[in-house]
Length: 456
View 1 (tube, rainbow, N blue to C red):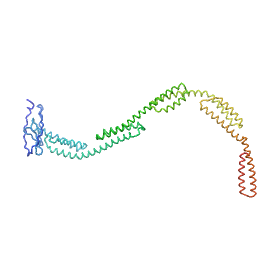
View 2 (tube, rainbow, N blue to C red; view 1 turned 90 degrees about the vertical axis):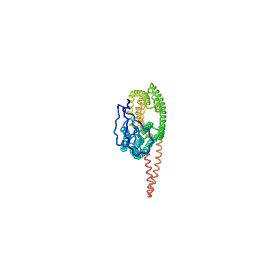
View 3 (cartoon, rainbow, N blue to C red; view 1 turned 45 degrees about the vertical axis):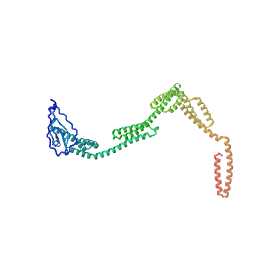
View 4 (tube, one colour; view 1 turned 90 degrees about the horizontal axis):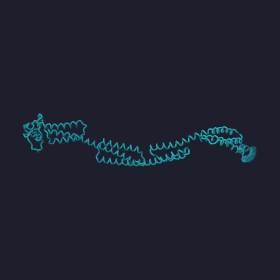
């Protein structure tokens, strides 16, 4: 015996329908598979709504009442009429639950009105010729009311979405314009570390906006991305060119400085005599340009070490020379003490003889090291020499025969003028001419002052 033989064929009572309307177009009716013999279907009691809105024909067709017309919704041939109605009533309940959920979400807020509208519209389609028993017209009316209430919210949501989209386009455009502004700079003069940071930050901002902001229309997004990509390409190309040139410059400087290091190290056997050549190499080093920090530091350490070796040799030589010069320094110090007597000697001839003897002994002492010590001693001796020279010049001007002759002539002339003025003064006094007296007195005073200056 098959499983189907164990399930009785339902013969439901046929309720008296209201006045029937014109027949509707037949629709395909799904058949429900028979329940397995081991698990007989549980018969659900027919609700008053199911009995009100549905019936089962003699051939097992389940129909639902819509308006004044009965519409076939399916068949349940392997169960009772109650089971058949209960099955399709549950279908109605499922639709009702969906609608109730949408209504609850709409009232609760927080959900997208656009998404709710899509779901409500889909549910409205499900309610058209739905294979369910219940107040389908009532559900449709509730769905229509829900759609109407959502229409205004959807419009506001769409407007807000447009505004958000416009703002997002503006924000994305601002990022692009900043990148284009960087690309428009004179990239031959920029600080590339700073520019690289700027472009990285702009790209990060682009990605963050793309991930977290509203989705832009494909055409707009592609256009903005092309502008951003082109700007970044300009900057990247200039950066690569800059660092390529910089690498070449560093390479040339590195080669030049490497050769200078070799030449400087080759000066070591020359010792102190190699210092002038090393100083010239220092000028060449400065003119060689930058080789990059690491290379510069390493090469400079070698170059400096070569110079340090030369200057160490000079320091050693200077120390030896200074030690050898100690007796000569003492000798010249003693001569300077003796030379102080030159200034105290009033007789210039004896003072000159004393200084000449000291100068001869000074030269016989020989060279002194270090040179700055020798210069200091020479300056002290030169001061004594200059003092005597100044005294001699004053004496020469005073005792020069030619000067004396000129002074004598002038004195004689002044004596004659004074005698004449004295005579004129006496005449003016005798005549009582005050003006002539004043003029003669003034002129006489001036000539007497001149004569006194000449020692007359």
